[in-house]
Image (tube, rainbow, N blue to C red; front, side, top):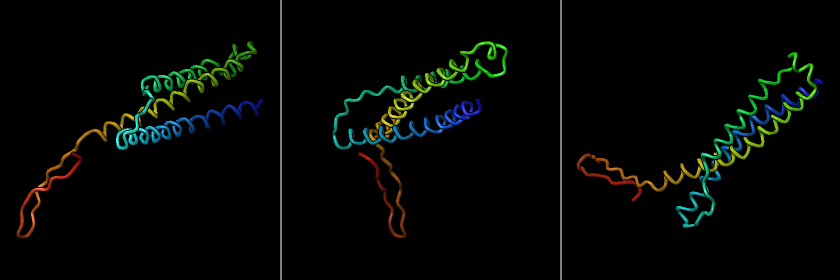
Length: 143
């Protein structure tokens, strides 16, 4: 059984590294889509579902943790019940089925929301300008 346990440990570590990278990558994709929508006038037909995405990611993490905590090798129930390793593996795959789409939806929607908020806000700065023989006001920003 060491090969199976090694596979489970490596797959859990790989998923732990891949899911945040997936969320960040789709966040950048969402930022690009929002930029195209605002600056170039392209209409986006995608609906942003951030709450659903982050909820799916949280549900996937909860399923993963519950299956890891409840099905521990070495317990009396583990040794007497031959389907616990199968249930643990199915819990891992169910967690990934929830967490991966959640990371995609959550990351994309966060990128879109952040960029829309940043680009649609008009920022005007007024600063005093002082020189050796001159004084004035500088107005800069987005109008």
